[in-house]
Image (cartoon, rainbow, N blue to C red; front, side, top):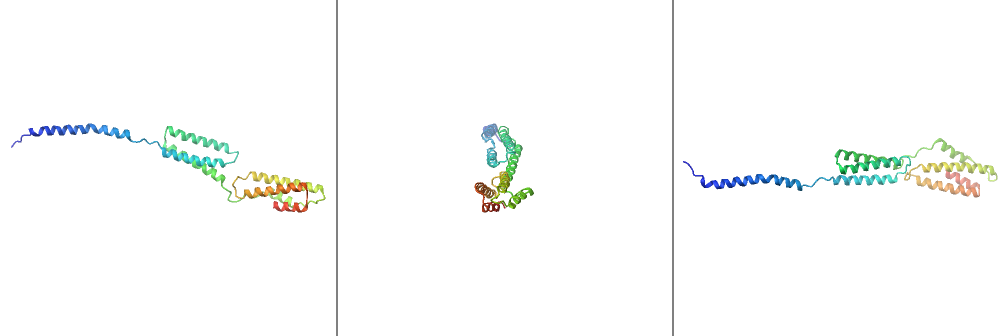
Length: 208
Protein backbone atom coordinates (compact mmCIF):
# COMPACT_ATOMS: atom_id res chain seq x y z
CA UNK A 1 0.00 0.00 0.00
CA UNK A 2 1.44 3.38 -0.95
CA UNK A 3 0.91 6.60 1.03
CA UNK A 4 0.49 10.03 -0.46
CA UNK A 5 3.16 12.26 1.21
CA UNK A 6 2.43 15.39 -0.71
CA UNK A 7 0.44 17.07 2.11
CA UNK A 8 3.51 16.78 4.46
CA UNK A 9 6.14 18.24 2.08
CA UNK A 10 5.60 21.90 3.11
CA UNK A 11 6.10 20.94 6.80
CA UNK A 12 9.32 19.06 6.03
CA UNK A 13 10.67 22.03 4.08
CA UNK A 14 9.83 24.41 6.95
CA UNK A 15 11.60 22.17 9.46
CA UNK A 16 14.69 22.05 7.24
CA UNK A 17 14.74 25.85 6.91
CA UNK A 18 14.44 26.32 10.71
CA UNK A 19 17.24 23.84 11.37
CA UNK A 20 19.52 25.53 8.85
CA UNK A 21 18.78 28.92 10.37
CA UNK A 22 19.74 27.66 13.81
CA UNK A 23 23.06 26.35 12.54
CA UNK A 24 23.87 29.64 10.85
CA UNK A 25 23.25 31.68 14.02
CA UNK A 26 25.48 29.55 16.33
CA UNK A 27 28.83 31.10 15.29
CA UNK A 28 27.40 34.59 15.75
CA UNK A 29 26.30 33.76 19.28
CA UNK A 30 29.72 32.27 20.12
CA UNK A 31 31.49 35.35 18.79
CA UNK A 32 29.27 37.66 20.83
CA UNK A 33 29.95 35.69 24.01
CA UNK A 34 33.70 35.89 23.38
CA UNK A 35 33.52 39.65 22.86
CA UNK A 36 31.65 40.27 26.09
CA UNK A 37 33.91 38.03 28.25
CA UNK A 38 35.99 40.25 30.58
CA UNK A 39 39.72 40.34 29.90
CA UNK A 40 42.12 39.22 32.68
CA UNK A 41 43.91 42.46 33.70
CA UNK A 42 45.68 40.85 36.71
CA UNK A 43 44.36 43.56 39.02
CA UNK A 44 44.60 41.25 42.03
CA UNK A 45 48.27 40.49 41.34
CA UNK A 46 49.14 44.18 40.94
CA UNK A 47 47.37 44.95 44.21
CA UNK A 48 49.45 42.28 45.94
CA UNK A 49 52.64 43.81 44.55
CA UNK A 50 51.57 47.22 45.82
CA UNK A 51 51.12 45.83 49.33
CA UNK A 52 54.52 44.12 49.12
CA UNK A 53 56.26 47.34 48.10
CA UNK A 54 54.54 49.35 50.86
CA UNK A 55 55.91 46.87 53.41
CA UNK A 56 59.38 46.98 51.86
CA UNK A 57 59.46 50.78 51.75
CA UNK A 58 58.37 50.95 55.39
CA UNK A 59 61.20 48.68 56.49
CA UNK A 60 63.71 50.55 54.34
CA UNK A 61 62.83 53.86 56.02
CA UNK A 62 64.07 52.37 59.30
CA UNK A 63 67.30 51.05 57.79
CA UNK A 64 70.26 53.24 58.82
CA UNK A 65 73.36 51.36 57.69
CA UNK A 66 75.17 54.02 55.58
CA UNK A 67 77.32 51.43 53.80
CA UNK A 68 74.50 49.21 52.48
CA UNK A 69 71.62 51.71 52.27
CA UNK A 70 72.45 53.00 48.78
CA UNK A 71 72.93 49.47 47.43
CA UNK A 72 69.60 48.28 48.83
CA UNK A 73 67.87 51.35 47.38
CA UNK A 74 69.22 50.34 43.97
CA UNK A 75 67.76 46.83 44.40
CA UNK A 76 64.36 48.27 45.35
CA UNK A 77 64.29 50.56 42.31
CA UNK A 78 65.16 47.64 40.03
CA UNK A 79 62.32 45.56 41.48
CA UNK A 80 59.87 48.42 40.96
CA UNK A 81 61.03 48.61 37.36
CA UNK A 82 60.31 44.90 36.99
CA UNK A 83 56.80 45.50 38.33
CA UNK A 84 56.19 48.23 35.75
CA UNK A 85 57.42 45.91 32.98
CA UNK A 86 54.80 43.33 33.97
CA UNK A 87 52.06 45.86 33.23
CA UNK A 88 53.18 45.97 29.60
CA UNK A 89 53.89 42.27 29.18
CA UNK A 90 52.43 39.99 31.84
CA UNK A 91 54.46 36.91 32.74
CA UNK A 92 53.28 34.72 35.62
CA UNK A 93 56.75 33.25 36.23
CA UNK A 94 58.37 36.69 36.42
CA UNK A 95 55.59 37.80 38.77
CA UNK A 96 56.31 34.93 41.16
CA UNK A 97 60.07 35.60 40.99
CA UNK A 98 59.53 39.28 41.74
CA UNK A 99 57.39 38.53 44.79
CA UNK A 100 60.05 36.13 46.05
CA UNK A 101 62.79 38.79 45.69
CA UNK A 102 60.67 41.44 47.45
CA UNK A 103 59.91 39.16 50.39
CA UNK A 104 63.55 38.09 50.62
CA UNK A 105 64.68 41.72 50.82
CA UNK A 106 62.05 42.41 53.48
CA UNK A 107 63.36 39.52 55.57
CA UNK A 108 66.95 40.73 55.28
CA UNK A 109 66.08 44.25 56.44
CA UNK A 110 63.81 42.95 59.21
CA UNK A 111 66.61 40.72 60.49
CA UNK A 112 68.98 43.70 60.53
CA UNK A 113 66.43 45.80 62.45
CA UNK A 114 65.63 43.05 64.96
CA UNK A 115 67.18 43.40 68.45
CA UNK A 116 70.20 41.24 69.11
CA UNK A 117 69.36 37.99 70.88
CA UNK A 118 72.43 38.39 73.10
CA UNK A 119 74.50 41.56 73.56
CA UNK A 120 77.93 41.44 71.91
CA UNK A 121 80.68 40.60 74.39
CA UNK A 122 82.96 43.46 75.35
CA UNK A 123 86.40 43.18 73.87
CA UNK A 124 89.45 42.82 76.08
CA UNK A 125 90.52 46.35 75.12
CA UNK A 126 87.18 47.83 76.19
CA UNK A 127 87.21 45.93 79.47
CA UNK A 128 90.81 46.97 80.15
CA UNK A 129 89.95 50.61 79.46
CA UNK A 130 87.09 50.60 81.96
CA UNK A 131 89.22 48.85 84.58
CA UNK A 132 92.07 51.34 84.04
CA UNK A 133 89.80 54.30 84.76
CA UNK A 134 88.23 52.54 87.73
CA UNK A 135 91.66 51.88 89.27
CA UNK A 136 92.68 55.53 89.16
CA UNK A 137 92.61 57.31 92.49
CA UNK A 138 93.64 60.88 91.77
CA UNK A 139 94.38 63.21 94.65
CA UNK A 140 92.25 66.33 94.71
CA UNK A 141 95.32 68.41 95.57
CA UNK A 142 97.50 66.96 92.79
CA UNK A 143 96.77 68.76 89.51
CA UNK A 144 98.79 66.28 87.43
CA UNK A 145 96.85 63.29 88.76
CA UNK A 146 93.56 65.06 88.23
CA UNK A 147 94.48 65.89 84.62
CA UNK A 148 95.60 62.32 83.91
CA UNK A 149 92.38 60.93 85.38
CA UNK A 150 90.19 63.30 83.34
CA UNK A 151 92.12 62.48 80.13
CA UNK A 152 91.59 58.77 80.72
CA UNK A 153 87.92 59.45 81.39
CA UNK A 154 87.60 61.42 78.14
CA UNK A 155 89.04 58.49 76.18
CA UNK A 156 86.55 56.16 77.84
CA UNK A 157 83.65 58.50 77.03
CA UNK A 158 84.76 58.64 73.39
CA UNK A 159 84.78 54.83 73.25
CA UNK A 160 81.29 54.71 74.74
CA UNK A 161 80.04 57.22 72.17
CA UNK A 162 81.47 55.17 69.28
CA UNK A 163 79.92 51.96 70.57
CA UNK A 164 76.55 53.67 71.03
CA UNK A 165 76.67 55.11 67.51
CA UNK A 166 77.33 51.64 66.09
CA UNK A 167 74.31 50.17 67.89
CA UNK A 168 71.17 50.23 65.64
CA UNK A 169 68.15 52.18 66.84
CA UNK A 170 65.60 49.92 68.48
CA UNK A 171 68.20 47.50 69.81
CA UNK A 172 67.31 46.21 73.25
CA UNK A 173 69.12 48.21 75.94
CA UNK A 174 70.25 51.01 73.62
CA UNK A 175 68.09 53.70 75.23
CA UNK A 176 69.30 52.77 78.70
CA UNK A 177 72.91 52.90 77.52
CA UNK A 178 72.35 56.30 75.91
CA UNK A 179 70.96 57.63 79.20
CA UNK A 180 73.96 56.22 81.09
CA UNK A 181 76.45 57.87 78.71
CA UNK A 182 74.59 61.16 79.10
CA UNK A 183 74.89 60.97 82.91
CA UNK A 184 78.60 60.19 82.64
CA UNK A 185 79.15 63.23 80.41
CA UNK A 186 77.26 65.46 82.83
CA UNK A 187 79.37 64.21 85.75
CA UNK A 188 82.52 64.73 83.66
CA UNK A 189 81.53 68.34 83.01
CA UNK A 190 80.93 68.89 86.72
CA UNK A 191 84.35 67.40 87.60
CA UNK A 192 86.01 69.69 85.08
CA UNK A 193 84.59 72.68 86.92
CA UNK A 194 85.25 71.33 90.43
CA UNK A 195 87.09 68.08 90.98
CA UNK A 196 85.96 66.26 94.13
CA UNK A 197 86.65 62.81 95.49
CA UNK A 198 82.95 62.07 95.91
CA UNK A 199 82.21 63.20 92.34
CA UNK A 200 84.96 61.01 90.94
CA UNK A 201 83.86 57.92 92.87
CA UNK A 202 80.26 58.40 91.73
CA UNK A 203 81.33 58.68 88.08
CA UNK A 204 83.56 55.59 88.31
CA UNK A 205 80.65 53.63 89.78
CA UNK A 206 78.55 54.72 86.79
CA UNK A 207 81.20 53.34 84.41
CA UNK A 208 81.10 49.83 85.90
